[in-house]
Amino acid sequence: MIYNSDLNVIVEEIRGLRKKMNRPRVFESG
Picture 1 (cartoon, rainbow, N blue to C red):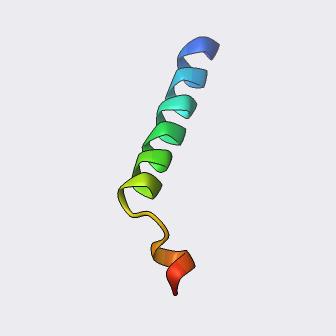
Picture 2 (picture 1 turned 90 degrees about the vertical axis):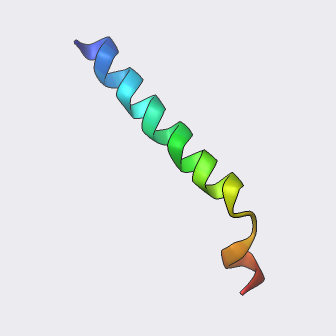
């Protein structure tokens, strides 16, 4: 089950990266 937990963490990280890529530089632009 350790492998499954690691996969869930990776999926959450990928979702976070997709959210950042969908809205590029929104926070940086101010």
